[in-house]
Image (tube, rainbow, N blue to C red; front, side):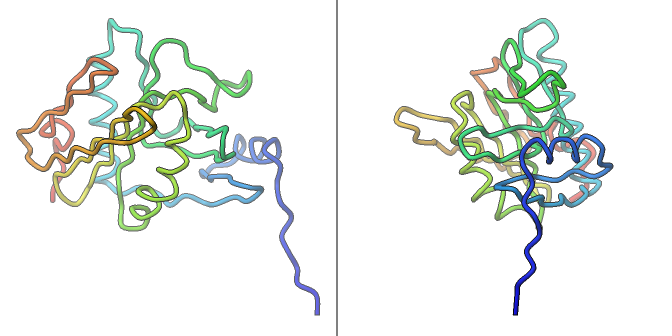
Length: 189
């Protein structure tokens, strides 16, 4: 009996497919992984984050990208979509289409029931291989809770959790502060 395997895609085939697709997929080692659609809470939190970063970055050299900007992790070959990505200075892209970011300094993932284990585990492992990445925020959507990870010497990551809506997170690498009350504005728990 023979086992039928689906053919593996090259990164070029993935990008050609993804650029025409109406849905988003991650790519790793030749395989596509469809991404689930976000909830209302998820969308509100992402919109709040992008708005907060945008307003603080107006006269500064940082750029904020929402979840439609694909991120490539060169060391592992993962192509994925972070909920929010921030770049300091010039953004570096994989090719002339300028839709696959290579150098985020900060990544934000809004956690959901279906993705939380992956976002905390394997996906965060991939992200940590990005030399440009200095901070990562994991943002809960079921309660006010943000985990702030900061890269330390020797590739160690320091975690500072925030659970109080009156808290503010100082993001020194991008010279801004995120207030939890703004991150969770209009979110019903």
